[in-house]
Length: 304
Image 1 (tube, rainbow, N blue to C red):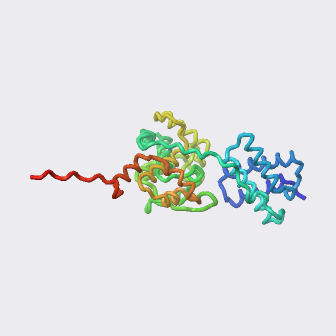
Image 2: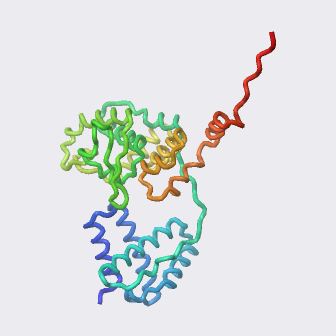
Image 3: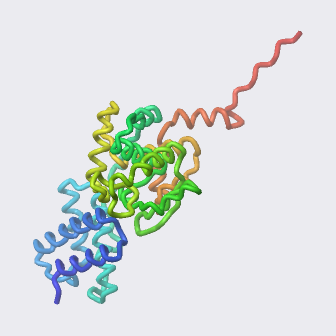
């Protein structure tokens, strides 16, 4: 009979082969499931069939006591549920011990964003150096279309539709969505595409390294941090900061929560609702201008 570690190895290979999640996500699942393995060793649980719901509750309680956040514990539970769903399909387990178990509720942190002026400052990258042109296109596309880092890195040339001004994005769970590309981002992309062949690309990925290879996530993260410092931004610039800024600015301007949910690729609208806290002054202004009981009355003209 296979050990728990062997089951986990097979499960992770299954995820990689099926390409159900990004490589970064699969690596995260591996780290989470190693936590499960270590816990089971401490409890002398040798087989997957030995793990019961009270063991999972004990694991979550222990990690919470050690300082793990609610979000981290939620991901750990998702990893365990995914593993046992797979084992049940493979007839290696009869039940899923993580079903119905929830992590302790934690304080939901509001996302950091850049305001419109800060975004303009960050994106004002001058210069015709090929790496500058590439990085400007990356930054513009992040902000224009609200992409995740993994989504941007997976983009291939044929997924950018120049005629319809869209990108076809593969998000979490291999779900695809179409996202508009704004005018500034299109201009930056055209400048990059005119130079891309000079990098002698080895694969059809939209963005490549100096050596023509697909970009590594850490490379993009490092370049964005450097551009944040160079452009005088007073906070750490990273891909998700641009995604947060895209969502908050679009929601602030449109008020269309469902539309923003679709553009971001959120499965649950409650994830999108976190952006509704932003810019209360803007909301108050909209209220004053739109609500019948809030509109300011025009002064009556004085009598002749």
